[in-house]
Image (cartoon, helix red, strand yellow):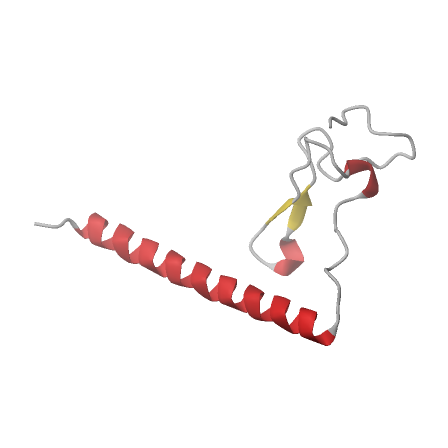
Amino acid sequence: MTLPGDLFSRANARCHRRAYEQWHRRQSKQHILRSQVGFADPTPSRPLPCRQCANYHGVAYGTSRARRHTLICAMHPYGWLADSPCPDWQA
C-alpha cells in the first residue's frame, strides 16, 4: 500500500525534474544562439572586490524578480562597498 505522502513526494520530484530539464534546455538554446550570433560570454556579475574570493556566494533569493536579492557573502550580504580591499577576502 502506498501512502498519499509518498505519492505526493514522487509527483513533486517528477515535477521538479521536468522543470529543471526545461530550464536546462532553454539555457542550452540561448548559449547556442549567442555563439552563432557572435556574442561573447555575458559579463561577470560578480563585484570587482569579490572576484576570486572563496567567500563569494552570489545566489539570488526571493520569489519574484522584483523581490529577489543577491546574497554576495555571509560577511557582506550586499558586497564590499568601500574603495579599500575587502578585509575578509580569501583566495
